Image (cartoon, rainbow over all chains, first blue to last red; front, side, top):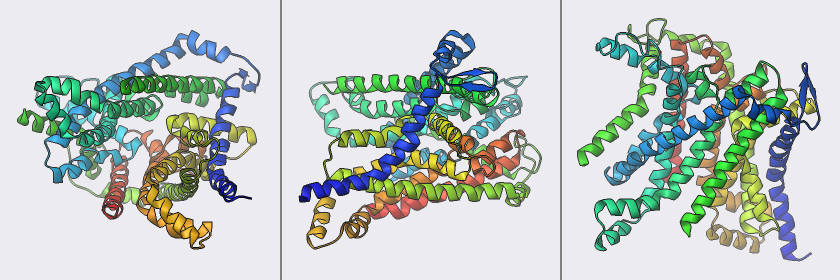
Length: 284
Length: 255
């Protein structure tokens, strides 16, 4: 055996555990779920087969379709608001905060990132709830007479999500901003661009890769999250993950839950396709 | 413009810290509800949770699952990264794609897929099954971080060691691993924090023995309580300690 082929055999051996693990516990389970999504329920029994009924129901039944629409609406709202809030924050930390305090400023800005995810949503309940901090403050100041219904609404879900993703996006956008050489802005200004033109045509486009990456991660994590809408949104309007859990828990309808999961994954894939194409166009 | 920047910065920090401050302050509440008014300072809720055996068992389970699954993910991720960075295999790109793929899929879907598999093969749910799920989500992370940290520098040193007669195991253990130590440590710490805090996989794939996030989840069912605040504050303290430790030991050494 030649040295090169010996090396290749060895490399295969080293890659094998990771690849086999991923195949056994990620690819195979996904295929099993995909197969299950074409099964149907007879009473409480799962009957395997090739029945597209679950998918037809997911798009044809308004109560199911509404969950998908809610999820997409909430996720897009959260992504846009988070980017709009995080960009200036990252820029201020990168450009205004003195160099030696930047790491500290960034660490502080994302500190609550490290609380327990479940507890973070719960904390917002303490702030937004009927007897929560905001309502008591507003009533104490005499601004409102009755407590505002903030918790168990879509607004609460969005606030909870935005809180989490502003921290995440601040990190990715900051990482992008500090890599920008100040020479770009100088060159633009030497060539006669004003401050606004420099920002809009030079700085902003250069940070887009960081923004798109962060926005994509936000989209994926947000649309697949069960905890935040469940704790903060209540059961008034369901998101897709809540519906999936409901199908599984209350009715034990695994085939329907599987079909909804496949749809969730398809939406994420669409977002990925959209982002990657957009990024490539941007580079050209 | 300058003043506006500082105002924005302060508002952003206020927004980011508001829920955490409320959480911690009302964990010391001398009363039954963790909302204003603040009745006075008390440590009763901390006493309560620290003597709660269910909670402490869940905490132990979480630590166990986090460390074992992260160690496994790190070892497999490191070996794969080592091989793929060095040798060009047919299908390298595909292999990398397969290894990274779980990163782009929601945890809920990973959990549901595994639940389907375990149901169909008759594997009973336990901490081990949750651990398997956590390896699935942390393996891509460990692989990507180790892969990104490998440079020509490493390859040269590895080749030199091999020329001098080192076996492959010696190269891995004595050359590659120590050279990549900061990246590997960072990957390990990050995996531990992800696993430690992960809810949905642990929720769907455990049955009788549960992890801390699942236990906290069941505490939430009984409504608002300063006890939940106290647990949350303690978890926060542990995570902050881990983050600061990573910052001080790992990243400072990397410089």
